[in-house]
Image (cartoon, rainbow, N blue to C red):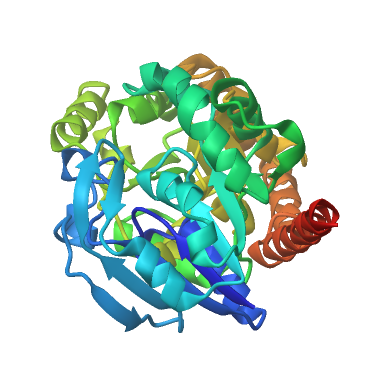
Length: 406
C-alpha cells in the first residue's frame, strides 16, 4: 500500500513515533512518504535546547531519501501559529502521492483541518488522525481554544476520519472530553521501543562509564531528555543529595539539552549539596547513541511528565521510576518499576535507595521491562496492530458507502 504521513515537524535524530511508525511500515513492504515542514518545533527548540544536536530551527525545504530509505518531503511553511504550521502545496503533494492511507499526525493542526476540508479532492484515501494530547495539555497556553476546536474543527475532522489513533488511554479520554471525538472511532496504540536498537549491552555500558569517569561498582540513576524546570531534574538532584551522603557509590547521570541557566542552576545546586562530583550532566546525543548511556546505568528516572525514553530504557533492561502521570504509569504495570507522586523527591529517594540496596530486585524489574518490550511494546507489533485496525476501518467505510449508494 501507499502510505503518506503528514506531520508538522520531523526530526528522526530524536526518534519518536513519527520516525518509528513509518519505518516499520516500510519494513513491512509498504511504500511510505513523510510530508513535513521546513522547520523544527518551537517546543523542541525552547531555550535552544536541541540546537546543538539539530542545528538551526529553520531548514532547507526539499525532497530526499533518508538513510533508512524513507522518502521525506519538506515543504515551505507559509504560516506558523503556535505549535502548528501551514504547509505550502500540501494538498497538491498528497494528490501526487495518491496514498491508499493518509496518516495525519495531530488533530488540531492546520494540516488536519486542510485535509478534513478537502478529502474528496485527495481521492478519498483512508484517513487516520493521530491524537497526542494528554491531561497535561489542559495546562497549555492554548487550552482556551479547545472549546472552539471542539465546536468547529473537530466535527470536520471527525467526518473525514476513518479512524483515530490515541497514544494512551489518557489521550483517548482527552480526545473524547476536550475535542469531542467519538469513542468508537478511537483505538489506543501505546508508544513502543525497538528491541533491536535498544538492548542490554554490558560492554558498551562499561565503555561509557569509563569515558564519563564512573566506576564499574557505582550505582547509576539516569535521566534523559530535555533539561527544563518542568521536567523536574532538580527533584532528582534533591533526592540524590541524602542518598549520596549515605551511599557514595550512587551517581546521577543526566543526558540531554536544555535551558542553559537551568543547567547552571543544577550544577551549582549539586555543588551546594556537596554532591557535585557525583552528578554528571552530559549534552544531548543523537537517538542511536542513547543505548550506550542506558547500559551505563542501573535505574532510569523521570520525576515529572512522560517520555518515550522510558520505553527505550526498559528495552535496555533498566527498572524505571516515573511520575504518576497516567500515560507514564501505563508503562510500569509489568512489575518493572515504581510510580512516585509528581515531583516527590522523598518517594524518589526511597525507591532509588531500595533498588540500590536490593540489586536482585533491580535486575528482576529490568528483565520484566525488557520482556514487555519484546512481547508487547515493540514498534513492529504496534505497527502491525495499527495497520490491522486501519484495514478494518477502511472496510467498514466502504460497506457504509455502498449501503448509502444502494
